Amino acid sequence: MNITVVRPGDLGETERSRWRELQKADPSLDNPFLSVEFALAMDRLRGYVRTAVVEDAGEIVGFFPYERHHFGIGKPLGGFLTTCHGLIGVREVKVEAKALLRACGLNVFAFDHMVAGQPTFAPYESDVRPAAVMDFTAGYEAWLAQVKENSAKNLKTWRYKERKLAREHGELRLSWASTDHGELRQLLAWKSDQYRRTGRVDRFAQPWIVELTEQMHAERSPGFAGVLTMLYAGDVPVAGHFGLRTATTLVGWFPAYDSEFGKYSPGIVHHLRMAEAAAGAGLHTVDMGKGGKDYKHWLKSGTLHVSEGRVSRPSAAAAAHWIGRVPFNKARTIVTDSPSLYRAADRVLKGFGRMRSTRGQESDVKEPSGAL
Image (cartoon, rainbow, N blue to C red; front, top):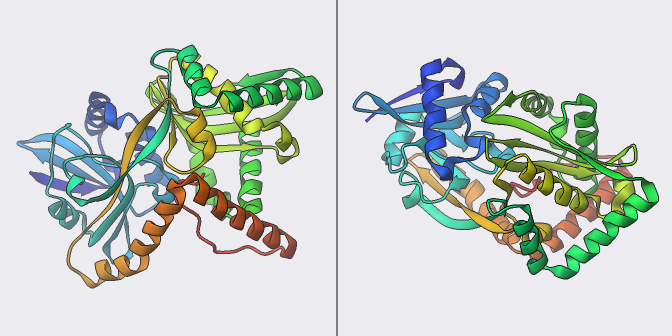
């Protein structure tokens, strides 16, 4: 095999078309974070983005997008922002992982949302975790029946709050795939407020993340697009979500709501309406990602699997990386995998958020990856 490393923006149209062809051919790669469009957007904003092009007998058999940081530390494309990464290639292609790292100039590559079972990285998986999905392949009504089976009590409560919200604030409507930039700004403002209230780092305090979100919102191709949804009560927006989709899969990214309407559970009401709209738009799946949030367990009707692991070559940088990251990552996984532990940790972070708001100070506290 021959491996060439380039910036995604340097790929020609032939290579980009091959990327899309490989992704479409394998259902396990049906995730917008694995799309060439996402790699191109990241490359426009961050100078450390690279793609390894893998060829066998003169034919491209795979693309490996990644970030190369100082000391040869490799990270998945998009890092903590994304919930899926991997090698986009022929289904059974296997690249010798350490040879891949050497060609990429990496000493270590750690992953926590890898497509599970990829031949190149499977030997280095330390854990495989389920990611909750809403599956509409049997239709919206079949999905809703599964939600009722998961928790009829919760569904009844949500429907009651949905009716109460409409009765007290006006008829509910969902804006699907909105192109309104003002709605996007509103959603990001809610999300920033949520990060601060719950003790997380405000991701949108980083201008490049705001710019990435805006660029993704502008994407409008059949195989890749940003999808903004907004739930209104009367003329007032109360909850929304921005995510990315392929032709058939929408991935959850930034859900948020107006905290003034918190007693109505507007986030859940929005998700119920969004699910109906997604199914009506022909999407097969909404990927909610792994993690311990209760609503994912209530709304799911299927699972995908992602893996955690680490590949390294002998070096001082790899050893330092292990000492600094691996124990923390293991502890984080234990917490985010357990709804009860996640709730306990969430309470602590919310308490910290209240303290921080009172003092008017920002913090460097790190949050669990995928806690969007």
